Length: 93
Image 1 (cartoon, rainbow, N blue to C red):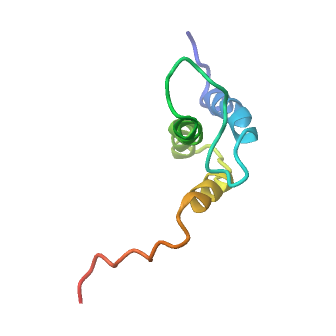
Image 2 (cartoon, rainbow, N blue to C red):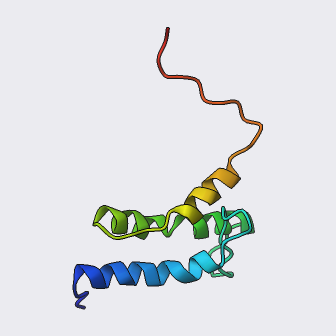
């Protein structure tokens, strides 16, 4: 199989991401992509649907491709507990 040029690969990744982005939850932290043969809870499957595209999107960005990170950013923000205390500094003093 021949993949073509870098631009072709970048386009393929975005073509794969587009239908997932369209299925993101209101908070954008999950993607309900339907049911498959794997046995996961709906929550786990939706989290997997959100996280799996990162494998392609990160490499796309690292290779110079343009990625709109807003959906992923919004999903990470909306999934973080709002009542969690801020992280402690790793420095002492």
